[in-house]
Image 1 (cartoon, rainbow, N blue to C red):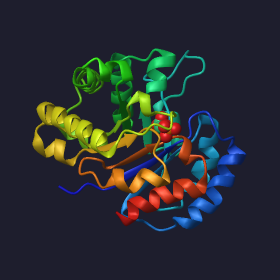
Image 2 (image 1 turned 30 degrees about the horizontal axis):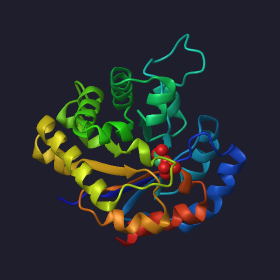
Image 3 (image 1 turned 180 degrees about the vertical axis):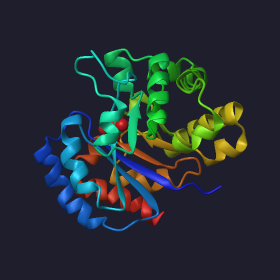
Length: 255
Ligand code: PGA
């Protein structure tokens, strides 16, 4: 089953609107025509409008938010709704990032509500899962990942899975410079796909795109992408520099 790779830049709390425009200017010139990889940029909320203006005419690149409220509207100070993200041109929403889980206390139940709200609005969740080092070393890798998948995907139907991207991000590899080895990432992503198979059957599992995230850099992108169950990346630190993110995307196009 061939799956189109998806390589996404997760800028986290970096890049003002002005800095986002300075990044996108050369980057969008480099990737100005559709390629065999879906390229996604996830700026902060305040940079979405500026980024959308620049990205919308470009057929190769899509816009993503980094988070979203599951509530539709109302008295939720500081929150952002699906309708707002759709209106500003988002196609994707990153949900359940480990920083949201660990710093802001998001659990699978709330992430599941966000997944449903994103899908109902016609956008595509990039659903993040991943284990801590203690969980991996304590033999809990599989139970943690399957629990996150089952909880976050509760009541999501097989027909909705075509719009969901899974991002496997071992917490110990995020922002640490320690990347999972290609074998570790492959073994784990294969396991993630087997959980999807249990939940949705082999056709859906075979068609679902599973990204790897955690210290992806130009120097390790190609080898990771060579693994059969790695269908792209969610890139943090190395996505802040247009040249290095362009090199990671190019590894995907070439591979
Ligand atoms: P990193 O972050 O590439 O800086 O490790 C990845 C992520 O958190 O999505």
